[in-house]
Image (cartoon, rainbow, N blue to C red; front, side, top):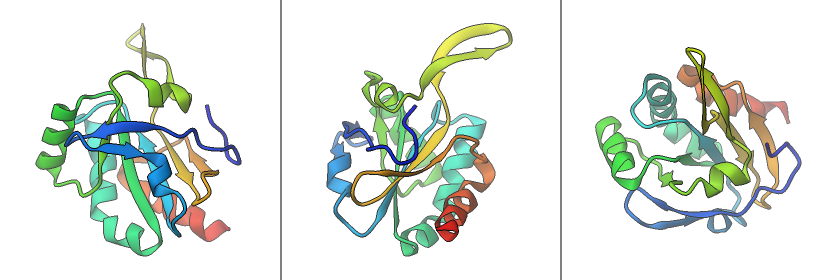
Length: 155
């Protein structure tokens, strides 16, 4: 998994509307990019996390953050998820797993004794030069914004 202080892998992928999202388009601004990886659209933890970011979206923007969500769900799934919960930020459809693999968040998981490959819930805060400033790997889905904003205060 990519660590704090490392260069964030550049990526490109399609959002829910088929628009190309490139990390390099978010760099060079005064904003920090919150790149959050989550397992699946419209599941309880992923919904809690997305809605927490939605409910605090304006505060995050005011503090200089821009949000990008990534999962391996397709564009159609992302459209439904965004519409159902009125999410104001793009969700990238990483159907070929290239982004999750580049960031090292595609890992073996286990549920009810069954092992499978899946996306680990991790958030990377990337500065304007493309350096990973923070890695949040113990995400509190219902209070994720506080985790992000409190990191900003520690610096």
